[in-house]
Every structure is written in structure tokens, then in C-alpha cells.
Image: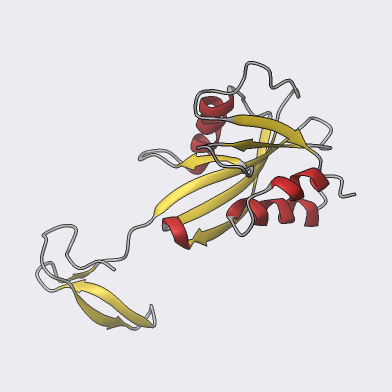
Length: 169
């Protein structure tokens, strides 16, 4: 919870804001409401040209696999961040990408913007960068076995299966 104004540094007080239906931090010095800040990130399920496999990766020494993603930088829109992250982490460029859903992820105070993307080829050799421990193509069933449970990645995997974007066996 914010305790001080991000503009002037004054102590904030909670005031009811009718349109919001709840108490919102208010700066009596600036005479303005101050809304909580949060991070914004993208995550992307990358498909083979045939949509029969999805790429997942491991990072930071973890055992389970996740989808590629990263934070949206100041001045970027979500689509620019998606293209940048695909290039930074895997040296890939999307042929196309489509937004799927957004969700607030409490553990990192982040609004996650989920996409799926298509790439021209399956070859991952020499693509991954130092940010990635391992990257592989998985069928839907294989991905269900290795995905981080309870995280955004599991929700994205469930959604691509539900929408029929990948063959579910």
C-alpha cells in the first residue's frame, strides 16, 4: 500500500472515491487521488508453423518450464515488448502474434498480458541467449507435465488448449 505521494512526498490518507467504490490513497497537499503502481509484463506461447508444438523455456535455475516473457519497458507498448523479448531471449522474430488475455499476478504485483505467436521455423539451435537455461518444443501433453503449476504459464497453456490453438491429445 502506498504511504506517501509519488509527486510531493506528503503522507497519503485513505478517502472514499465514489466512482471507484472504495477507499483510494489521497494526497491532501496535491489535492489528488494517487492510484497504486504496478508492473506490466508480456508472456507469449510460441508455436511451430504447424501449431503442433509450443516452445517453453527454463530460466534462473528452475526445474519447471515457463513461457517466454518479460517486462514492458517505459515508452514501449505490449507488442513492442513481445517482439523485443522474443529477440532478446531466443533470437526469434514472430511472423504474427495475437493477444489472448490479461491477468493480475499477485506475487510480483504485475499485470500480465498473454499472447500467442507463430514463428517461421522449429530450429532452436544457436538461438537461446544467456538469459535462457534451456528451451524446447513440447506437445500439449508434454507441456502439461513440465509447466510451472499455479502460475501464469499454466493459465496460458490451459487457454491455448481450450481455444484449440494446439492439438490436444
